[in-house]
Length: 403
Image (tube, rainbow, N blue to C red):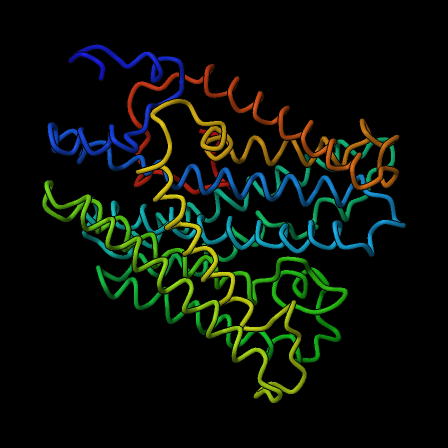
């Protein structure tokens, strides 16, 4: 442990030292006040976000480099099946960080309408980053750029719109915020098949892509993608309140119990939603499981909760107190997202696009991952860190900062 008045060497190097494993228990016993101060960092969220980044890199690499004749085989199908969790994870964690911010904002700003405006500004900031990302891709597509590249609805656009809708949760206090987020998320998930079945003829294509699921529509429509943000907001508010509003000496026990509940609720959602999805009848006229099914949303939320508990268990009791490449990816998620998309889909690798076998694509995935880990490490080493990062003041996750 660093001496009073002197920064930890890892912190000075841009690599914060999380309290994990036996070191975490000794810190809790000897310095409960210090642990309470550092609980804001939540290393398990960095690790979970890093895992989501890894899944995203795997999905995009296989999608870009694998030959067309191997795409019907099991390995490629499995890569895209696993990669399908990347977007829900990022949306869920964006909602968690949004919940952290609202909890902190409630203590600083008593006027609920001002809290709502602050949350709306945050959503607008994310949308601005989304368009900056699209414009950079449009520039990178020179010398034959297409204007549709700018208006394409990507994960960041979906995240910004969803956070704008759930910004209204800032108006509520405490448990009412959690109830509003859960109710809104369930409503979005339940209405998704209804929105898909509506006739959108005559509606501008851009609006359809932002709102409606279905074939030949947007990949990340508000229905049902916004539901992940709502569920994440509720989870984030509960985690934040558990970590900071319990007695110092019992905070660890409360967090442990909360993560046990996350795991139990997560598995219950997975198995229950899977059971109802297999029932041969449906209340919807033409349900599409992979695009708009509420059951799929609940399954993925359950997986997210189980992964949250697993990440907490690993960082608190399994991982050694040293630099973690997985956490580094999570701490620089926006930068890694931005760079790796331009790398695997850009002209610089056009010679290898859709030309590699499965083993060669797996090797490309390893190479891209190593490059992104090096980029994350360089970014963290370069960026000064004068104090532990406070998630309560964070503007978001993947979509808002490179931290």
